[in-house]
Length: 179
Image (cartoon, rainbow, N blue to C red; front, side, top):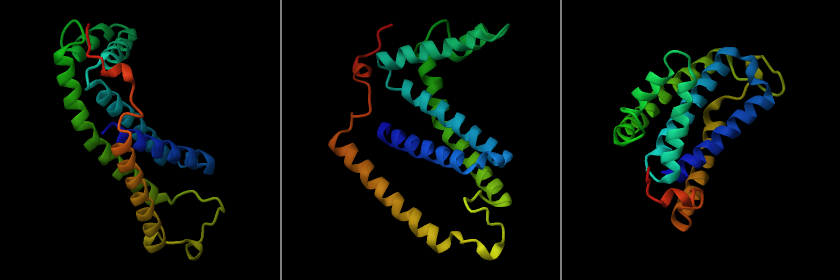
């Protein structure tokens, strides 16, 4: 699961880099929906990072959730609500697991909205072609290319997961949390 998340973020960063390179940020609504998806993915990844409940996970949860205390007037109450008590503990872990489970479904909804917005305005292209007759349709050329890329990425993920499953993990996170 951890290796899959690492690969997901690799492709997400490549997608963002491609969007920056081709000037996709000029498509305001598409770009903002993409930024929302990115932030939601970061939150889901953080919630998942805490779930093994090792030393790194515990202290990451403590430090990051304490950032909420910087919000004036309501920060300390928000921290207590997220923790489910007065410190990071089992109720925090249960809440993080529940949110980690729900967030991918919310991300999927935003991805659909993102694609619909992109489909409405059309994607940015390096040549600036705007005529319909100059466009290349998604099916079959890009669909086949994407399927081949997906199969190759899946193969790499399987090889990494079988041969070196802990290569992208912090060794300190194998130490059980000891607050």
